[in-house]
Amino acid sequence: MIPPKRYKATVVFNKELSSKVYVCRFRVDDDFSYSAGQYGSFILEPTVRRNLSFATPPNGKEFEICADVTPMGPISTWLVGAKPGDTIEFIGPLGKFIVDHESPRKKIFIATGTGIGPVRSQVLDEIRSSKYEQFWLYWGLRFEDDVFWDDEFRGLTASNPHFHYTLTLSKPTIAWKGVDGRVTDHLFDQKEQLSNFDFYLCGSREMVNDVTNRLLEKNVQKEQIKTELFY
Ligand SMILES: Cc1cc2nc3c(=O)[nH]c(=O)nc-3n(C[C@H](O)[C@H](O)[C@H](O)COP(=O)(O)OP(=O)(O)OC[C@H]3O[C@@H](n4cnc5c(N)ncnc54)[C@H](O)[C@@H]3O)c2cc1C
Image (cartoon, rainbow, N blue to C red; front, top):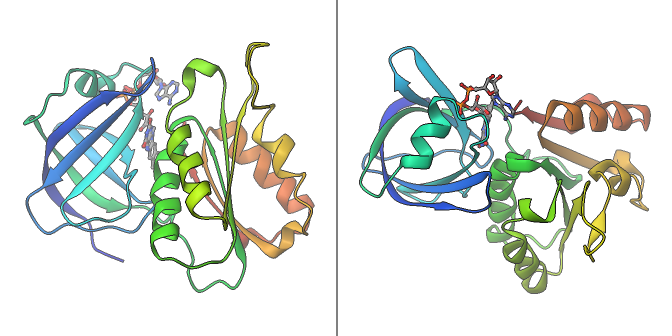
């Protein structure tokens, strides 16, 4: 793994993806790399740091993050006001939420909310490594207004038939024509034995704990489940 260091990142663009979520692209002038799924610890003041995951696969000098700004603490406030050219320091890469490429098992990625950030990095990394092994992404949001990046993932399924994607809303209006319910409702519909897969879970504590417990009940081993808890 690449040892963490302190870097300066410059905002390339910053965009509202939904009423709660911003995507911000940064450029780092030093040599910088990471593994898909890792995060940075962003420094707002000497004693104030907040974690944000890299939402793009390792790509030379630039990366994106996607952040839920509803907490409106120091990092949310900074992001809402961030403009191209603004700078922030971070320590990274950090974390062990990394795909096990040595494993012979197929992969299932599961995210809720902005937990999609590191999972998007992993999914895009899987696709560009052009293995034709099938893999699955289940993503849970609440409302129609929360939806972002759905077109991107749908587009990827069209050009990569080995990639399977389900977006599910837990609180849609009656007008919603897509899949509804929680990610767990659909994950456990998989026809194949769940013990044949590795699982990558990221997002809310509730989802991560619920899915982990249910997988363990289905004889999936602990080492087949990697998790990143956001909140
Ligand atoms: C390893 C790791 C990676 C992470 N990566 C991301 C990421 O890529 N994108 C992302 O959106 N988040 C991510 N998070 C979560 C993010 O770090 C926190 O939400 C962060 O605390 C928000 O910082 P803030 O300064 O805006 O608010 P804070 O000052 O930390 O919190 C303000 C208030 O909001 C509450 N709060 C904090 N976070 C949440 C939340 N998510 N939901 C509801 N209430 C909250 C706090 O308890 C506090 O009362 C990650 C967390 C971890 C541990």
